[in-house]
Length: 380
Ligand code: NZQ
Ligand code: ZN
Image (cartoon, rainbow, N blue to C red):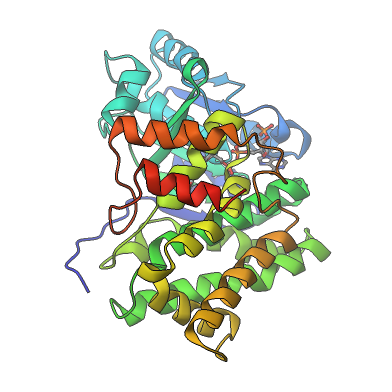
C-alpha cells in the first residue's frame, strides 16, 4: 500500500425529509444563489421542499444547467452571481448541476474567464457551495471534481474546485428518475469503482474488498431497481454506493486508471452520448485490449465478483470480460459504438486529439492516441 493522507471535508446529510435541514445548514447571513437543471425538480417536489426550507432567506435562482454542463451557460450564472454579490451556492440536481456549480464557485471568486480556469485544471479558491443531490451517479456531491464541456469546440475536460460544504442525500428524490438515467447512473458507479480497482493485485486487501463490495452491491440492486424504483432501502443503497464509489476513499494507497473515462468523455463531447452510457461501451474494450497488463486483477475480479474460477487463464479472462459486457446489456445500455448509433469517424478524431495533446492516460501511462485507437476499434 502506498503512503497517503486523506481528508474529505464534505458533511453528508442522508435520509428522508433531510432537505428541510437546509434552513440550518446554510449560514444565516449568506447571500445564496440556488442553481438548477432543466426542471425535473419542479415535477418531483424537490423544488417545493427547497423553497420551503429557504423561506425568509436572501437568495436568487439560476436555472438551465444542462446535462454535461456547458461553460457558455455557466458564464451567465457567474455574471448573475457577481452582480448579486452572491457568497454561497446551493446546487440542486445531479452531477451536471453540482459540477457546473463548482466552476461557478471558482469563477465568481476569480477575474479569469471560466474556460481559462477549466484549462488550468484546478482552482480551490472559490466561494462555498453545497448540494441537494437528485441522481446517484457521479459522486460529485462528495468530491471536488467537475467535468465541463465547451459547446463551441466540442471539448470536455475535468476541473477541480471546492468540495461541497455539505450534501443532502434523500433517496426518495430518486423515485422520479427515468429508467435510462438509472441505467447510466449504475454504469457510472460501476466504472468509477473499476477505475480505482482494476489495476494490479496485492496493493491493499482492504481497498480490494471495499471495491468488490461496492461492485457486488451495484450488481445486486440493479434488478431490484428495475422491479421497483420506489423501494426506499434499494434506492438508499443506490445513492450511498454512488457517493462511496467516488469520494476519494477507495483510491487511497492504491494505483488508479481512468483511461476508460478519458475516452468516454471524448465520446460525449463529440457524439453527445450520456456519460454512463459511454463507459458501458469503453470499459469492456479497455479490459480486452489491456488484458496482459491487467490480467491478474481481471482474474481476481472475475473470481470474487462473478464467481468465474474454471478454465484456463485466457478462458477466465474472456468469460470475465463477457460477463461485464452482459451486465451493461442487462441495464439496457448499448455496448458498441454501432449499437449506440455513433459514427465510427470518432475513432480517428479521438486518436488524433490524444496524439496532438501528447496525453498518456491509464495506470501505466500507456493510453496515448494509438492505444486509444485500439481500444475504440474494439468498441465497434
Ligand atoms: O436537468 P433536470 O431537468 O434536473 O434533469 C436531469 C437531467 O436531464 C435528470 N434528473 C436528475 N435528477 C432527476 C432527474 N430526472 C428525474 N428525477 C430526478 N430525481 O437527469 C438528467 C441527467 O442529469 P445529470 O446531472 O447530467 O446526470 P449525472 O449525475 O449522471 O451527471 C453527469 C455529468 O457528471 C459528470 C459527467 O461527465 C457528466 O457531465 N461527471 C462528474 C464527475 C465528478 N464530478 O466527479 C465524475 C463522473 O465520472 C462524471 O464524469
Ligand atoms: Zn464517471
